Length: 232
Image (cartoon, rainbow, N blue to C red; front, top):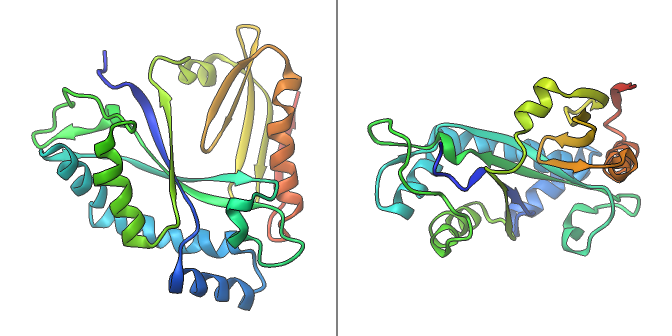
């Protein structure tokens, strides 16, 4: 049994500051695209650089004073379908209503030591060292206004069972790669997308708000569309 408290930890990145922000903004306006689209393209390069340079390995090793290999990262994003004052930098035009925030998932149970062994201590984002040695250096290095952290506890419902044994009752995929699925499992409903797994819900209607956010996001993005929709 894993010693880890969290099954996965997600970094959600706020907009950048200064010249970096102005450069992404100029690209979006010049190409007649949303800030979210230009920011996502920019972050693909940032994530590739972080992986190539083993940045997270180095930061976690510094944090815990021993060599640590993160081994797997999963780039994704979080959608805000309604305007939010904290995300004003995303709204370049009066009609802009949504924001797509780049995110990066890590998986503590897959962390290993220098010799390839599983860690004998837990990775806890609530630990003050996590902010000091991991979050703050990333924020300063790449000029982000802020970075939010979300964790899914390891002892929550095993969504692998939901995915493998549950019935998929609704699935939405968009042209830019976003997706959301709803599963029925043991008489309950579960919601999954790139960033989060939610549930159980006793009523299907409890999940409708999440799906409506995705539909509104697509409707407000002229570069996006629904590419696949399954509903049973």
